[in-house]
Length: 329
Image (cartoon, rainbow, N blue to C red; front, side, top):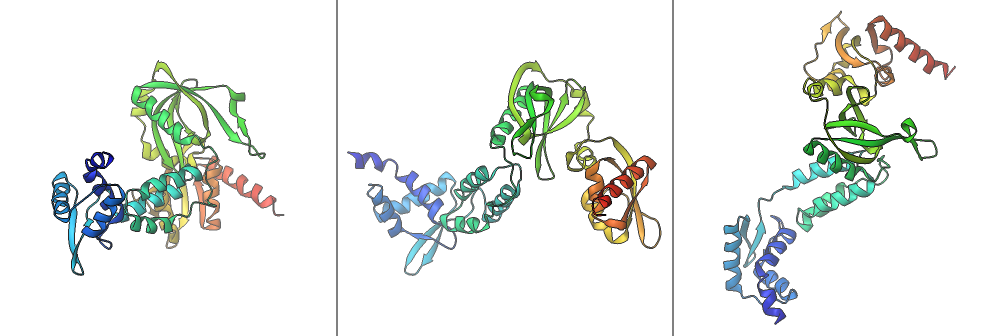
C-alpha cells in the first residue's frame, strides 16, 4: 500500500520538517510532528518519535529539546550556516553588481532554504535587490562556471568582448573578433568580477570584465603565461588598477591632508607608508595605473590631494581637472 511505502520515508520527512519549521525560538512538539507526518500519509506513535529523534542525533543532526508548557519541544540547534552567516551571504549577493537582479533573487531564495521558515523571514527583510544597479548580462552565472572549468582543465579560451552603447545594445570590441587568452584567476574588484588572463596576442597579463564576455569556448590548447602569472602580485595588481581601468602603471607620489589618512588606507591598505610632510599634510608613494579612474578618485578630495610626481602624471591630472572645469564655465 502507498501508506506502507511512505512509512520508509518517515525519518527523511522528520529531518526536513525540523530543519524548515524549527529553531531555538520555534520548537515543535511531538503532536505537531504527528500531524505533519499524517499529511504525508505516514502513521506515527509518540514513542516511536522519541526513538526517531535519537536516530537523527546519531546521524549528526543537532536535535535539541526544551519544555513547551506541559509538552517537550524539539528544534535544530547548530546548522551548517547560522543566521548571522546567512545574513552576511545575502548582503554579499544583493550588493554584487556583477550578479543580475534575477539571479540575485534566485540565489537569495536558495540561501533562505538553509534556514528555518521563521529565520528566512528575517533574511527576506534584508532583501533590497530591486532597483539596485545590476549587470545587464544574464549569462554571467554561466560565464563564471565556464571560466572555472577552463582554469581547472588547464585550457585556453576564446571569447567575444563588448561594451554597452547608449542604445543599451552591445557594441563589440575588435568588430566582434574573438579574443584568445589563457585564464588564470577570477577577481572581485570594485563591485565587478574580472578574469585575470594571459593575452596571447599582447603576450602579457590583462583583465576582462566577466559580465562583458560572450560566447566563451574552451580550446584544446594548454594555457600559456604560467611564469607571468606566477610573478604577479594579485593584491598589488588590484590596488594599482583603480576600478580595473587600463593605464600605464607608474610609481606615483601624492600629497594628502592629514584628515584623509582613513580613505588612503582604505584604498591602499595598512601597509602603505604615510610620510609626514608638515603639520597638515603627508605623502604616499604607490604604484598605480595613471588613468581617469585615478584622477576621478583624487578629484573627490578637491584641493586636499595633489599629485607630486612624476611630473607627467601631475600634468595629466592638471589637464583632467581643467577639462572638467571647462564644462562648467
